[in-house]
Length: 147
Image (cartoon, rainbow, N blue to C red; front, side):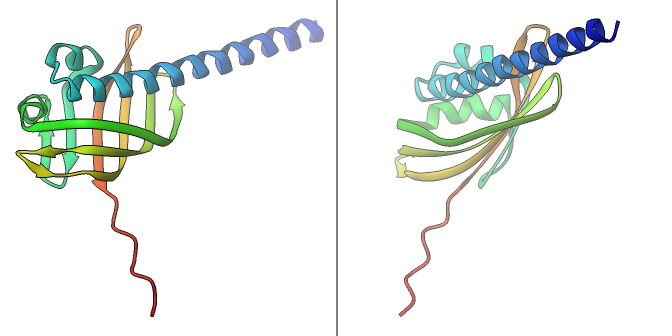
């Protein structure tokens, strides 16, 4: 009986670990897909991976899906590259991502290129992971060397 229980628990925990790994990969892929859709100005693709009730914070204020779709037209995002991507979850239907993204681009013709620190929250809705919150802040320039 104890062997059966031990085996059952081992299989259960293995399944949980595999499921979380799959969810992590899916969420990271969806984050990248949201950025690519934004870069391509593809509102339809963006709305497939981001919840209709999305909330966003940035240097320009607090936004939602409508402001993101409007901003999409103002941005000319030439490229983006992720690094230091990490995630955690303590709930089966919520995942938090943090990462650094190097971007090249403009907003309304003004250069906004540089490194940004970002965080996103994703919620599982049925079988789909949807972005529900995103925040980003431009990295401060390196401090001047001491003289």
